[in-house]
Image (cartoon, rainbow, N blue to C red):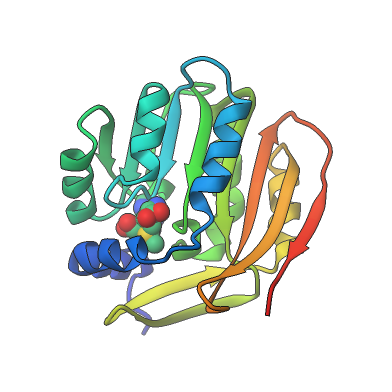
Length: 217
Ligand SMILES: C[S@@+](CC[C@H](N)C(=O)[O-])C[C@H]1O[C@@H](n2cnc3c(N)ncnc32)[C@H](O)[C@@H]1O
């Protein structure tokens, strides 16, 4: 019988919180800061931000907290503890993003860097609808999504880890069904061709969709 996927992810990240941070900080061409910088230019003033699957809070939750009130959410107690120490200006909640209860229309920006593919894909559409509900009209959702049909448990930094995703067209359709326009929709490969994700910026009640494919060999 397949182990409870959330429990697997939670215990996995409790174990690899520090090794993950060491590994990811060595990935020089990680595009997350470029996407975050671009989206922060689109939200004026001091945005209310929510970072889903915030990990240890650096660098992304920290940048959000520099701009405005920020909540980070992570399923792993070890990650939340690190994040609290790394980013004292943000608020952190230990919870699955799936079970999160937040007031409607209370955020200008919601981010999810490399976290949604750890949630079983049958849950993604419902999560997108809930994210749309938490955003104010015109609010942005910046996320990395899996780029292909995949639903596996495989080794990640020495622990079994859930990776669950749809293809890019299905992801886009689920976002549109949830009430988003998707003006940024790009498949990007980096880390010597070993890492590929679909990057999306989705706007609640927003603008037109432009699709780009930046796969590199
Ligand atoms: C690959 S790490 C990314 C961490 C951080 N966003 C970053 O960019 O470095 C994925 C994070 O998502 C968290 N996560 C996975 N599933 C989650 C869920 N259902 N709810 C909340 N957090 C989750 C993990 O605990 C982990 O900290």
